[in-house]
Image (cartoon, rainbow, N blue to C red; front, side, top):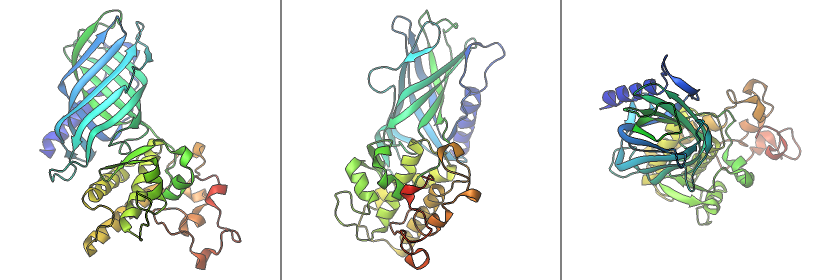
Length: 365
């Protein structure tokens, strides 16, 4: 199954970016997509209504690739539906009322029959559109800004969607209706900011990219998310040093960072998915075995590595490369990362009387 799906994924991605020597049009966006890759199938339908300028696409999801050939298949009926407005000149003129992008269904990451993500998986608003007329098989691509959904945070701030329209009646003329099939790929489209840690997101609530987020298969509102980031249970009661709350803090910080435009990382996406899967079957307060405790620590370590690494993110966002990062000392003493603990006073002392910078007063976050 994995080898078959890997071949399918590779074929769809390759066709979606190939182009044609005979193609005409205003040009594709030439998106550089990164994982997760989600593919939708050739039984989908593309329609364009010249009277309303509306381009509509509906299709069934096949699978998602997180890393290598590892895939999970959505349970039940999982679909993608996106709509946008393109004028007679082939230029994007806007979105439609409601969600421009909606992915619906459920997904089971560990194949235990219980979906970790269900309902509206992704929702978004259109930001860019490109096309090439290439005969019987035409090529389109789009960029959407993610605004919510149960899988928001596995994907970044923007997703790119390639669209292959087979048996197309499109002739490069948006003054006429056209239709055809629909298959293609959804993937992360960009992101170069530095990720931010749980402490930073707790201190900067006004910067949150969304006000609702799914963590461990449970949807939380803004106040519940803040309570978790503050080391409490979602209802505001004491957390009791629960390592699962620490893990949830890491998940929230990683998802917020990606939705804010942080650089995507394959290992981080895998760690987020694995952490969501674990929390879905181990609610807050669950007594953990020694093996489960070790797994939680390993997941936190993987997420912490992503959240504290500034070596590859853009300098334009106030995050210098690690070799010149003046905040390394702060990170080393617990100011950054996924632990609720603060400063190590034996090494750092009181932050008001030593050289460890206050997170609020430096330009690294």
